[in-house]
Length: 114
Length: 111
Image 1 (cartoon, helix red, strand yellow):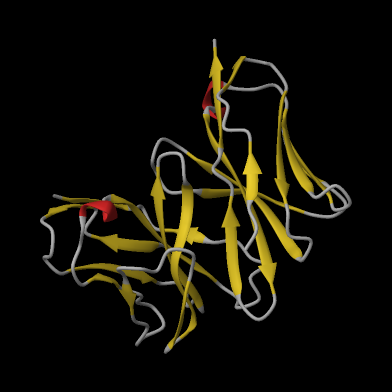
Image 2 (cartoon, helix red, strand yellow):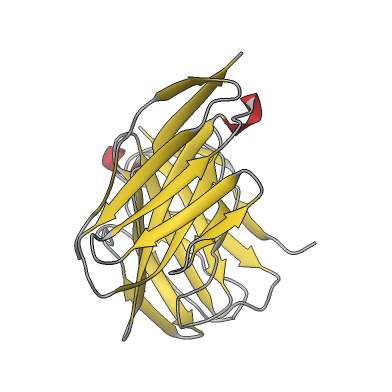
């Protein structure tokens, strides 16, 4: 089944404890991205990647890191999480760099930073 | 990057009603447009792309007005299962690809 998977789905952590949220897609998509969704603010892009080893900042990259060593994986790293990073996170992938195509979203990761 | 704006609603309509949402965008370089549906904090899923000539998929009709810089979604014969949040997405395609999401319009269809 074609899909985007994220792990963990739910995470409660404490301020300053490094964490990684994994994202993997099995559709051989070139484009992958991370979003956070907060009440009243909608979906905001954190980072995106046009292909392996190519990443760039989205709208709200502060406090996050990403890497794209393989086409299928695009982990999101919070080196020192803070309470304002409590949010619902979505990973997404899309087949073309051109950007005119549908994005496929993972099921989401609900993160709480205490 | 400029914003994409939607009326957050909620639009509260009876079953069978026709309801329309608009979404305005401010960047004239925007090149592709979509409507996504999101159920209660689940992942967004593509409802339909929006083409310049307008397009229809069953009870759903999407239209694009480039001159006035808005897209619209019309839902006819609303069903209870249409209750969700509808997200407008605008892509500016060029050197980079950063889709811009509206904040969503909430639709509640009641019996």
